[in-house]
Length: 466
Image 1 (cartoon, helix red, strand yellow):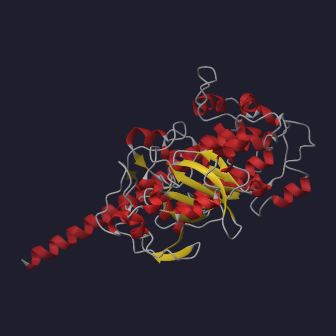
Image 2 (cartoon, rainbow, N blue to C red):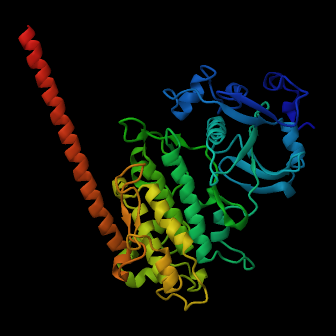
């Protein structure tokens, strides 16, 4: 098998000293030892130390040591699992490389992603993905089963997601493929937001995904969404830092404007990307579509002016829905999307607040039997009353600002149609932001004043002792 030249390379002896190991072997270490010796092509990773360089890549220099449990595969095992990477096993391709469907000796069906050594990503992204998905575990994140680092070969092994990506179900559908219905779209948006919430609010330090897009949202049975492809993920700012400075990476059309212009990355950059994907779900349009007329090619630029006129909201709904959506639900979904794609990062909500709003929308099942496109209150009045909470049907989260939320209120049940519009919602939330900013400035002023008093008192004490 001449095409698998790494089998007889000397480096394999270093990478895989135990030839007689089982099909998969679990290892526990700070960073996978065989990955620390990656050295393929012009993109080779130059390591200064076994652990230090891994921690630098992720920004982990000040973080405590972490234990990683990962399975290692030989290239021969993965070649056998994918039938020697034959075309019939091929299921897709991305920035990392080609993806193949495979079956392990245990019978488990997997997706095997093979690094394209001439592609957009390399050893650095491979290493980041192994470390990130070994440490992060959540129902809405794809599960990494293992990896291979034999010779020049770099492969990742994931659980197989039978329904493909969200992009496959939104754009360029073949005639025999049913478009996603409204309920499924809200369910996918809610689940994807929960995956981001885990990265931003539960992971410590927080993780910025940096490549949130429809092709990176994979779908399990029943359209359960999972985020995949963590090669561009970065650890977020800690302590008193407001952002992470990094070279601009990601996908055009999804990148937040402040990140694209300055390279300053925050969790709000991910919120912007989420807003773009949510708009894709609502409108059925691509983030960037060169086949559209001038002025409609960029989804955000096309949608923003329409947010200001309630009479045009119906134009934002995906035509493939054929009017089968709740008009009120459309208003509320557009309100969330419009806040996520605000030009100023500070004006965007935190992802925890987005999860609260979308969980509500996803739990309100729309009945396609109702009159298409009418203002729909999600079922009978009795059910509507039952779904309201004890505070008049409004969704409240973290009113004291604790727990990573912004304390922002989302009115998703009561009020008039005018109050449901994105413009009105944005105005309400901006008032909250101004109030929060004023409180923060007052706190900062008070702390500075107390610090000056303390310094003056200390100076007086030193002078009297002199």
